[in-house]
Length: 304
Length: 228
Image (cartoon, rainbow over all chains, first blue to last red; front, side, top):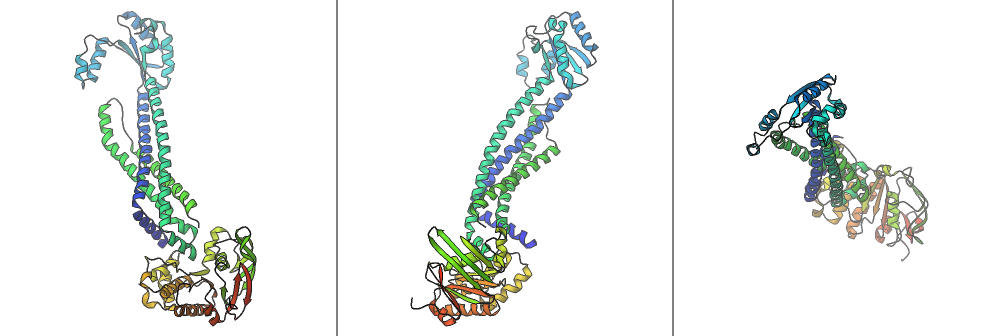
């Protein structure tokens, strides 16, 4: 068997050299499709990490209208604290809100400078013992009469509440769109890769038809004849997969730190475990594409 | 060794390439298959190799019903049948040695076996000095010897030859035929399809004559034919 494996590898390498333009085309299409798979997977991992962290520190902000009576605010605060689900309630005045905003926006002084009067409402920041029941608490708050009286926008009480679930929902909606677009592109590129591999293998079969004829003549087994071609398809795919993994690693090393700088409040990170999972998926997808593409060519063009 | 019963082969309806062919060839026989172009010689050979399946009838080769043989077993059948062709079918980018070795390599023989058997069979065909020559450096007769060496290196019990001397001059053809004779003496069943009249007449072996797909004559120590 030792000779056989050496033989297969040698034959596939020779084929690769002979038809390197076609092979390169196949490698590039596989690379691009797997890269898309990789990037959308990585995005998925990152977003789900973000969602998790957002859920962890989920809090409800209740915006209060300007000039709300202090006793009403205190009544609402006391009512909230009476609930077992509520952990803490903090009053944030208009001035404090502006101060926080200025700190967050320290990087863009032009925005801060343009603020003439304080546009920010005062708020009550509510943290919960269990982030998962945020919707229940929100529903209760909405039904509270004091809340309706002093909320920032009594006409649309919903808009006076800001809570993590909204961000989570928006993130989910966003990732769903990304995923759908990704799947469509990946499917199209997978078809193109299959066609490319099919063509390179067909050329390889054509350029070796004499050898194949003699192999058939002297009784080489069918799998022995097919082996080098299947291996060639798989090698092209693996090369594409390796390039895609490398590119994802490069993106991880260059783009992620910048993203982290740009979004300091979000934990943008790709864990090592996620990266391994991603690499595994790409390699397996590559092998599957290679085998199917080559197998298809063998069925159609190689009668053994 | 080879047995055909009522074999027929149609490529197109109404035009039989072979019709009602029944023949038995015993182990160790030397048989000529003669006839004009288009008489069905090549079809006969290709049926035995299971390149083709017959339209009807039964073919037994080396104890196996090759009509019913499963596709994946065909390679193992072919390891029992050496084949020689008019156009040699050598790989131009391989030396004589490599061409013969290739036949063993692709059926998974070990390097040790290849190293001992290839030089031996090249010596048998008289090419021990040309082992490192490429096909285009060899004469037609030498190329055919290489292809015979390749067909015989695995010591198959059956050797089929389709017009092996079709491209060669008479003197060279004689050499090739005597080589077949020598291989036949080792116990190998040899079947040679040819329309080389002088060769057939000089060898005085069993002759099966085909015409329009029918066997018209089957005689031992026969000759090519009567004036046609």
